[in-house]
Length: 235
Length: 300
View 1 (cartoon, each protein chain N blue to C red):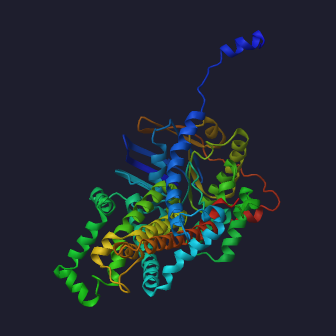
View 2: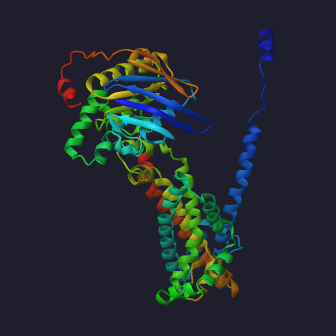
């Protein structure tokens, strides 16, 4: 669950005032707004990368407003992906796990699961520099999901992709949602993303936020394809 | 004659002046400077060639070059110059390592954090760059004559001893290394470190695991720059360390000492020795750098 209450944020010339909303557990909220409306600023505040002037942020029932990003149990995919260029794809996926001192065997297994989920197994040995837009987006998503966060924060994850890759990513995000228990907040300015993915749409306008569409969460899990049962269990 | 249709087609096209003059101007301006550098070095080489001034250099360039090399290495026969070379190489390396150790955290601090008096700190860091090196030497000399300086010298003799050489080099060279590291960190995307924070790192881990590896080439550049700067340091060392043979004499001091007694051949020979030492070290660093950070960064 993501619960934001009475948040006030300053970012350069503008300020966000009285931002309150709630995304239920396992929900998928799409946050829309024009360029420069403060979407990224709000997302960064939930990540703990900038400090709100007032208000509170609760993630899965825990007050995190004053906590550093590392203690918030989140996965964050920034707009520019920001893959670690000195590390291979495998090391990018393993990063959160090695920080948490998982053993080599545990890391191997988890990276394997992520590679299957995101269909990036052939990329594991590559460096991020040579990846296509869609590929690096998958790696960034895998890196964010590696430590099984309870909240996933996506900043314009599909903005730089061609139509075909967007379609693939929509499908991928849906399957991630089906196979994990993560609560997602997805920032975008594409109506298409909201239509495809959201069960809750938030609009940010003139420093305020309003909810435009809300539907109860439907569990549209499909019958798992062969070989995926164990993966879902682990995720 | 061109067909009429083609003429009308062309008349609607916009004509843009050729890029050739611009590119030529760039090449000429840049080329002149490169020529000046090469001409200086060539003049040194020609000066040391056996029987310089004669037409032999042109007739037997290879012989002349090996003769030059032999003449450039000739000063190494004297123990004083051997000592100066050794002291130069050791003190420059120590200075470069110290500078990197200071410059990396300092550059990171200036690039990533906002704090009170940051502007002042930034301005102070420019002092060693803009101040005449001689003044730095004099200031160091005076500093170590103050009560605090004398107290330190009771345990470690500095003035007119080897530590003063390193300190004089460090005082100037480190400022260049700090500038280099700051620019390096400024050019790195802070977003990767932020992502590392969300993935469970504290700021030190994000710095150590993400920013520092990404800055590896900058670290190498900062170290090389400090090393080269230290090799050429002369004024502060002369004032702060003196020019005692077999004690505080570094290669620039040797050039100065030889020049002051009118021994131009030896001065040029030592200069070429410095050129050779600098080129060898730069090559080593470049090759080592290309095999680690650079090679990794461009690997497909």
